[in-house]
Length: 247
Ligand code: ATP
Image 1: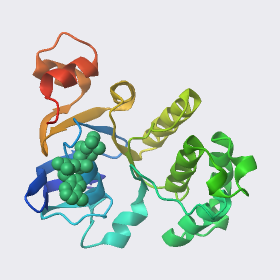
Image 2 (image 1 turned 120 degrees about the vertical axis):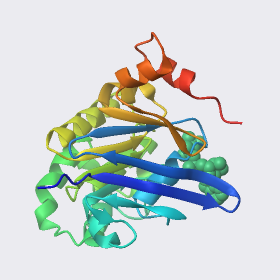
Image 3 (image 1 turned 90 degrees about the vertical axis):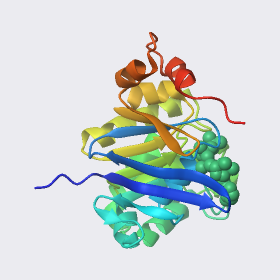
Image 4 (image 1 turned 180 degrees about the vertical axis):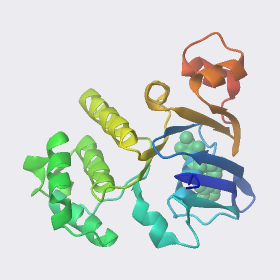
């Protein structure tokens, strides 16, 4: 059987008026791979992620998820994805349970089929006792945990997550890292953008560094170290060598 990448950007470009946010982006992420997308502020990470999630239409080129072109087959592509945006929106007047039911209904995923997964995720994130409470009473970190639960509840093959650790305490970090590892061990993929380079270094099989809408380096941390001609084991030092601060 031919190898189908879980994510495939093919010459994707996005312009906002005169601003070219993403230029000719091509990359593939394999099933089972945890992939990190790094870059200075304004580099184009969120724009690329929004094209991947089907929220922005590329000006040129295309993006495919598990063999489905996100523009041509949006429902097939979105069925495969669990998405956590950088600024998640949750209806504050729903309870946690109602929010999760809403997410399942959008995916056309039977609520009963998700019962076990829902219970597991809520327990893992210490939200079981909070599920009948309104989201407006949740802390920032609890909301982030609920959004991650919502992204995982339909058993996606691909988790797309923009800044996974925002708002989470160290327990949350550890939990989320364990979840990502497990997802990838089971043959699923994670595509994350992050400024937390230690997380990328610890979790990601490969990372891409994007600057001004273009990939400046892609590979394992060891490969990037070689490209940057850096002695450092630390991704942060490599990142600083390969990029310059945004204006
Ligand atoms: P950060 O790390 O700061 O979140 P990023 O790498 O996610 O940045 P993007 O948010 O994708 O970067 O932005 C890339 C470029 O596109 C920036 O120059 C930004 O100002 C511009 N941009 C993003 N969204 C819009 C928009 N809706 N309209 C116009 N320009 C935009």
